[in-house]
Amino acid sequence: MAIGLRFAAYADLMLLAGLALGGGLGRHAPAIGSRVIGWLAALGAVITLTQFGATCLAMTGNDIAALDREMLKFMAFETPMGISHIVRTAALGLLAVLWSTRRAGRPIIAALALVALGSLAWSGHAAASEAALGWMHRASDIVHLVAGAMWIAALVMFARILLFDFEAPGAMAPAVSALERFSGVGTIIVGAIVVTGSINLLAIVGVDGLAATFGTAYGKLLLLKLALFAAMLGLAGFNRWQLVPGIRATLGGGEQLTAVRGLRRAIMAETTLAVLILAVVAILGTLSPID
Image 1 (cartoon, rainbow, N blue to C red):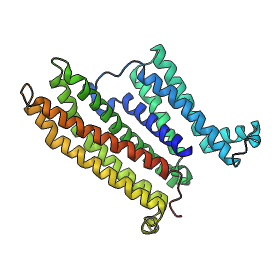
Image 2 (image 1 turned 135 degrees about the vertical axis):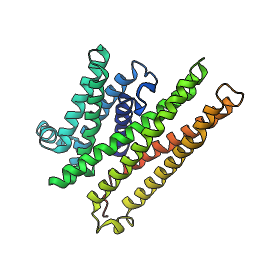
Image 3 (image 1 turned 90 degrees about the horizontal axis):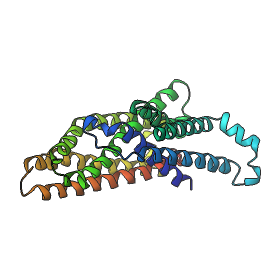
Image 4 (image 1 turned 45 degrees about the vertical axis):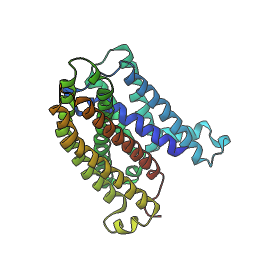
C-alpha cells in the first residue's frame, strides 16, 4: 500500500506542477481543460491525507487501536513527515479552491503546485539528511522533482497535441513549434536531472559507500532507473533530431500523417518509460540504500 500511495503522490503532484508550469513550452503550451488542475489538486490532497494515515498506522505496527488522538497530533505537528503533509494538504486545498473560483492567476497556481511538489523532499531519503547537507540534499531533490515534473507534463501535452491538435485545420505549424520549443528547454531539464540526481545519490550513500550500494536491492533498482532514464533520453534525442524535423519537412505534404504517427508512437513509448521510472522511485523510497 505504501508503494502504491507513493507512486500516486509522485504521479499526481509532478503532473500538477508540470502542467501549472506549462511543461516548459511557454506560449506554445496547449490549453489545459479547466477542471484538470482542480481535480489533480483535490486528488493530491486525498492521497496526501491517506498517506499520512497509512504512515501513522504503520508506526503502530498496524494496530489501529493505538492510533489515538495524541499520537496523530504528535505525528502531524512534531515530525518533518507530518509537517510536510500538512503543508502539502494546505497548498493543494488552497490551489483547488482558487482554481475553482478563478480568483488567482497562473503564477499563484504554479507557486502552490511547486510548494506541494517540493514538500515531497521532506518525506523521502532527503528528510534523513541533517544540518547543511540536509538542506543541500532537499534543495537538490526539489530541483530534481521540478525538472522531472516539467518533462512528464511536456509528454502529456505532446500526447494531447499529437492526438488532437494535428487534426484541427491550421494547427499543424503551431503544434510543430511547440515540439521544437521543448528541444532547447529539454536540454536544460536533462542537465538538471543528471546533476541533481548525482548530488542526491552522493548525499544518501556518500562517496565511500557508492560502490557497495550497487550490490544492494536499492542499488539494483537504481541501476534499473538509470537504464530507463537512458532509454527515455535516447527516445527524446531521436524525437528531437529525427522525427520532429521530419514532420516540419512534410508539413502540407502527403507524408505528414506517417511522420506524425511515428512521433506519436515515440512519445507514447517515452511516456511509458516515465511511468515505469515513477514506479521504481516509489519503491526506492521504501528501501535502505545500505542493506
